[in-house]
Image (cartoon, rainbow over all chains, first blue to last red; front, side):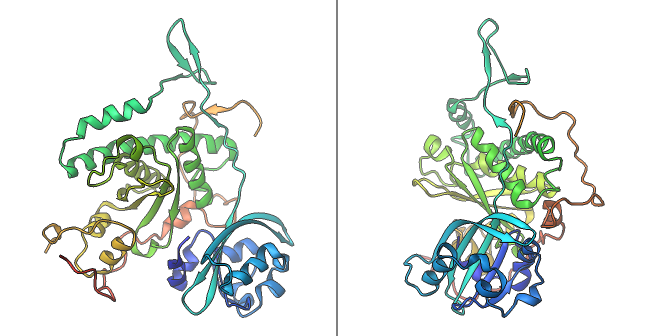
Length: 332
Length: 57
């Protein structure tokens, strides 16, 4: 959670696929986005200027919510942000949510983010049975399965290991995107079976959780998508616990998660219905540090990765941890 | 979820790919398709940054 949430415009806030409420230190609602209005079934115009805890969401008048808010707003909590799970009690029912609180340096307010928690329970399992007589593996549906260990990824890497960075990146992206499109189709089937909707009909956060959770079955970590840069035509992905820095990481330029960049491009292409590309901005070599990617159309991404000096794209690229190109790499 | 687990390999049969915009969305909240519908793929004009970048060596 980052404090660039506090710098969003009203249109940006309304486009967020999660609840967003800006509160003054006394709990007065200053901003209230469309998603939160849909979730709570409130009219944003009616809640603005009212006290969130007393007049709009009385169920939050408890230590675990209002108490934490007061500590954060008063600056006594130490950390500038925190996250906790909570259950909203609406007239129309209850809703489990994950609350984020961010103390904004702007206008002395606290940003509250509200993500719905859903028990997806996708029937994913890595279970396979081996037939020693034939040397074949089968899944629970009787379909043949092959397993690729980490040795496979190391071997695949040797194909391009000594190639120029641009060639290696492009090749890994191509492999990853095709894999991502195919993998998204597999997840699509499971979601349709389990929930009766396509991923594109599902809530964006739910669709992304399905795809993220499906990577865990393969031992590839999980990811979150940051939506703050939508207006710039970009989606930013933080991928936790990628195995590639451990497997392939040697400090090489351009990072080592090129195949994951392609995978994310495939996922987002499937969800958006448009062929997208992605690039690795920074590699999570250190424990607990995510690998960061940016995704968008190929044209937009190329502009973003080779920004004019002192442009807004250059500032954003640096802020996201990306590598600024050398002057010779920037087009005139 | 009831029933036996389904592996990732058990896939790609009877999948419905078409998205029908007229079909009622179960959730009143933002669907994936709606969210991407007006996505500004070209981004804003890359206006000048309000502050200078780090100095180049």
